[in-house]
Amino acid sequence: MKNDGFFGEYGGCYAPETLIAPLEALKDAYDKLKHDHLFQKALQKLLGHYVGRPTPLYHAAQLSRYCGGAKIFLKREDLTHTGAHKINNTLGQGLIAKHMGKTRLIAETGAGQHGVATATVASLMGMSCVVYMGAKDMARQRPNVKRMQILGAQVLPVYNGSQTLKDATSEAMRDWVLNVKDSHYVLGSALGPHPYPTMVRDFQTIIGQETKSQIQALCGRLPDTLVACVGGGSNAIGLFYPFLTEQSIQMIGVEAGGFGDQLGQHAARFKSGKPGVLQGTRTYLLQDDDGNIAGTSSISAGLDYPGVGPEHAYLHDSKRIQYTSVTDQEALKSALTLARLEGIIPALESAHALAFAIEYVPTLTKDQVVVIGLSGRGDKDLEAFIQALEGSL
Image (cartoon, rainbow, N blue to C red; front, side, top):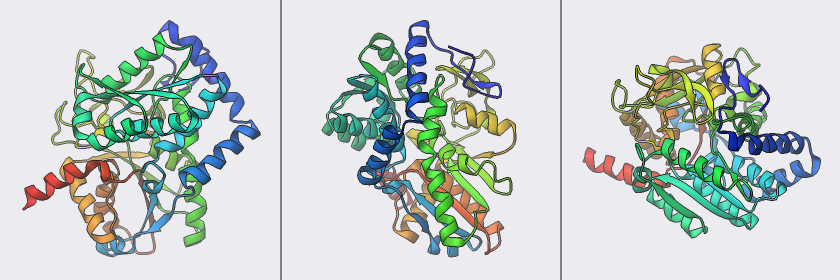
């Protein structure tokens, strides 16, 4: 593949020889279709009439009063069909796969939201679907496993390694190597070999584009701060990207702080990671002194990945975006706070962004505006919430 797809020193295409031609074909198809009027018309029609876009930008008045600082707005990706931002990307990739003559979709999933979104698109477009999911994640995200199966997808457990998202991604890529003729790999985050980080970002940018016009309509100006959780980073880059040239706007990405500071106790790549190559891309990775990929831990299956999107790595080094982390317990507490104050149960991924904002907003003035990316709803995490409530009792 040509030497492109880099964000500074990060990104690229580090793929097995058997995937270079399929990746080139995917890049060529995307480069053509993103400027194709009929493709964009079909995508926008589905986003509007099937997904339910635009999603609301909701003024969380009671949460704002509770924090005692800036006005808080929630970008409600939890209100999309399938319950998370993932559908924005899977619809786009599904249409590309259809254009390329593919009949089978492959996906990896951690929290299950991307798997559900891919299974949904496969059903909609009359394609078969297989989803790889770590056995550990299958146990803690059982509702989403059942949703995928109801939609007709084959959900295959992965027992290798940590039995989480990293291992599911490896299995999905192996499948694609063996079945490139009829299959398309629907990578779920802004990760992997080029063109995936750029393509996924572009499909998710609708989040930030809508937010930009909505906040202008509601407040007559742009926000002061944007906050989003960062696993692979697709919902965050989707929210942030349209605002990157607005230098006055602060952007904060929140990683999974897990339950401790040691390797294996969290998934905060910018806290203790260093650059390396994993699953097709050069980015920040959690790894030991010998370069072996370290284990991770997070109450949120969707943030439990040892790498981060390469564009986030670039934005971190350039200091355009600030990255921090919150712990499992802080995320749980913030989710319950939002539920009690606003009647919204967020996904545990989104709760990481909420947890940071709840601590940060009281330091701001009442005329300032903060937008939090609420990337998904918490139905899938009810077991974790129930355990937390029983523990508090």
